[in-house]
Length: 555
Image (cartoon, rainbow, N blue to C red; front, side):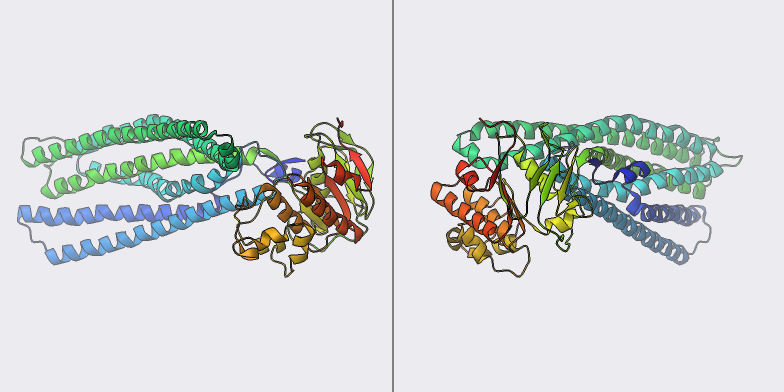
């Protein structure tokens, strides 16, 4: 059945929208607390500086040593609190990204069909580069927001204590900054969302073009493909520049209001100390200590807002990533049966029964029974569902209706892993791990693959590779032709003498001599008692099977 990225029906009913920040939320809150405490040290430092400088101007006795010692001790405390805040925030960010990446990889590993979210390029972009955009958001935004919620009010209260005029300046200029940030932020979020979508589309396009690179070169279509890719890349560049334009616009607005606010405070303090202004304080004239203190506080009043503005664009990018994560998490996806872990082979005869199983194309398989040791060919036109039948038998695809019975037991979550322990699987599209050829064949088991390579008629090919079994082919089997790569997967399928062999087009793309050798290798497995089920268009191969099952209508 279709589930949301691996969740069961029961889990879907009890789990709401996923909280992607939960792995690092507690650390993020602690980081915000330390960030606020670090910034609250500055008003005390400013008071010491104002006291010392004001004393020099008024001729009061001031101990420079004590003032300097206090200032540097407070500075050291501020540094320690700041470093602690950054360390906690960084740890929180890494935990969130790691947990999200682990969830994506684990869910995609169990996915049995294409995701409604997008192709491999979109998903890999989400798991790799997009998730990394959460790091600056987590490390900067939460702390900046906490500082804005506390520090400006503390500074405003201190300014109000000494001068109501300065407090009025801060009260008027301060709220304008978050208002314009919010307005600009809406545009930033929309631009970031479009950029994220374009990144996923471009990655999907790249994956498709790379997989068809050989065909593109053979068809002489390199230039149209390059032109199309260049146009997509140019579009992404324009979207990225749109995000940057919004960022510069909001920064300009912020700096304008901050500069005006600081300048007005400086003008008021300057004229008040010169005696040109006699208002703005609570009765008495503004003292030099108070004036210097207000001058030192004014920039800090706006600094927390500057930090929030810088982090605001990190938030816009992160919101776009969270939208992608929600879209991925909510996409209906067919999941594999079982957990994918090692299991002891399922006991019982290797029989298969498909009863009322609906294929994706609409056909229904009724009472199709395959006896232990039987050899069966599935034949039908392309797209009829032959591969789907093999995937159902392997537990890689769940039928929309009906059930599959293997070894006398229903193929479900409890039996799928144990059943697959008895299966040798040869897919139609070869795929390899980024490891040595030996490891791709044995999957880490202490087994000699030589006999399996000979049965698959690929021993000579392996011997001709630069490093033989130690050759690293890459995920697409670079250096092998399509037929050679397919025979390698056949050797992997028959290695270890499985009880059931499922082969999808084992003789496709092979010349007559090699196809005959592969056919003989499969029949050798059947002679030792293995159940052999092949999906094929090869009539010569099908004629050597015990029985042919028609899928769809044959021409």
